[in-house]
Image (cartoon, rainbow, N blue to C red):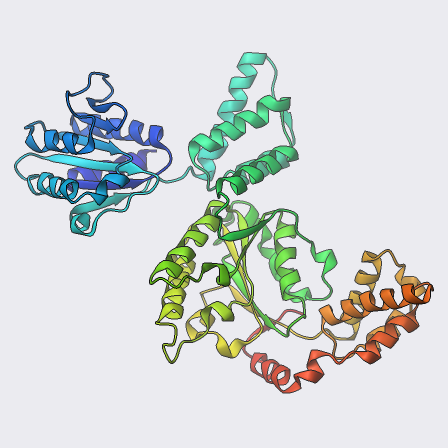
Length: 493
């Protein structure tokens, strides 16, 4: 809180006539502004369309200031210096008269120092005013502050009811983890709800928090959201990737600073289609116990100039709001294909720039999993070391992994693998990707049902023989991809 106050006070002391604040925590922001004004011994005023202009925290309203323009005219003419907070100003920026009045107030600052602070969830400052405007971001609560909120609410419950709250430490840790990225008011309400619901903090409270965060994105969310994800028990092979992720799990789900390491940023999974990249992305979220957010570039693209980049920024902001989470960009090359001819008006380059900026500057615990089937279409900037933590190549499964995959899919469909000649199936499926192996089991089940016979090894072998895997149909492309990956990436197996 002290840093927030100092940053805001510094902006005021720097003589910026205009300040832009985008936040949904209006009450918290007003408390901070009150402390900053007291610190500088400046009077504080606030305007709303409902109450007009008044001295804060007093209730007496300046006459004839209910309209935004009238309030600006009053501020422009008054010799009273101070901080003037304008709440929900966005609709009034469309009026050129209002913009002119704001500019005149700002230009008169050397004679009469008046700071206009525009506060709303969305504030788009007109171009003519931007050079005179400073931006203040009200930070979200830190993990330490969230734990302090949990402690305060638990102590309040104990004082009121004479007994401590119940619950497991794991649930408390997960609650603090998933409240990260939420504003203080929402976090406090959810903590209070968790405690007062059953005098305990349980895993059910975690699901409630995730539902709330998902609903807060609104129906117009640009990301597909999934809480229930898979696990690595459903993924055959990929032992190097699994080990790499397990080593980094404590840093991502716990306190990375305490461990003396950086929070993991993400991975790029390259490989053959159907080899398990998408399944791995889902398993990462499931094994780490965090939600999975899927970004589809097709949803973002818009024919109007600048809208695609705006949509991407909004989607990434939604991902940050859901942190800790896994953000999965499937077939990333389709959204970032190199635009050598400029056929899309430079949209791909601007989208790439937006994504790279987010990857470099984000502070949230949003683990990026980008998957790609065609590395030749990826821009070199994305492949540079440091954009993600590691690049893994997901190859066609070797013999032992094919056996493991067959056992997984047989068990998944309530068939005992011990009743099948799994080693023979794995040998026959040489060159098959994981998804193709799964489909031989699915197709064989349909075949056995048509014959009214129990599923047998022969049914699956028959499907293997009738299938031409991608490694055969597109052998040149697959061989080229495997040759490129050798020595450039880390094998996921």
